[in-house]
Image 1: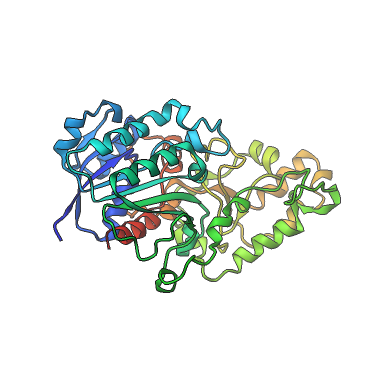
Image 2: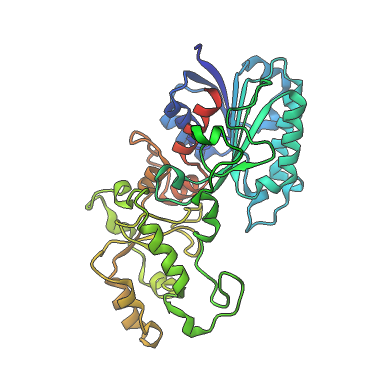
Length: 392
């Protein structure tokens, strides 16, 4: 087939570009568009020859869009208007305006693209922005399918549940098309012939990414202090984590880690963080088959931003946290230090996201900026498989 001409909107650090390459579909990026100057520096560092448009999407005229004559749009619009922890401003949030501009431009293009793929956070599927997207696609004659997928669907031990929509400009539906349904796993041949695919662990990620609140159980009922085993974890929570670690369909985290001696001591958690957040940390070991979603605040904020790695695998967590509250601060720090807890490095998070080994950051990009950019990125393996399904 002739190489597809692809327009990459909200290009970030190039996750969509790498996914396109990994899909094996012959294609070229005719323009990558983003306003984040640091992300653009990273993009240019890795893709020297791709045309980079450092401008707002609203600043691109219909005439400029038409000149690009693209066959595919790949995009990850800003997720902040739709996140559960945000204000959920949806279409009233100023950060949604560029996406609404795209929806306004799309029907007026001289040549409609053949393919479209969008990624966003869980929550987008219930938004007014999604409804406007669907109305525009139907108006233009696209067939579409929605997904909620996590990398765990592809044996990757990282929970990162995301919304995806693929659309194709043709009358025939996808072989796996399920009208009005959001698929929660990749389709296989059996699923293509059935009404609804099997349930995926990925969709359950909501309960996998947070420690339980100290005052309620998973059903919202009140918990007495004695119901916690250790580290503010209930018996049910501990059992759930053990089940994940026993799921042999998932890889071990050690497959994604850097070798010891690569400056990893720089990522050890400071004593003040250990003392303050010890009971809230999601702690994993290299032999674990799970990790929580890494957000843009990782390495800067502690609670709810991602798992931390226990490098002393011979130490049992329970032995450290039993009777923890009765210890002095000095004793707590001494016991916690036995675990040798550290952050995952940016390279390790990039590995979990599927970035190839040749991907790198310019020297001037700080570690904090690397965490922020990776937290805003996507899983390349998931998107690559979706692109393959879209164009197949």
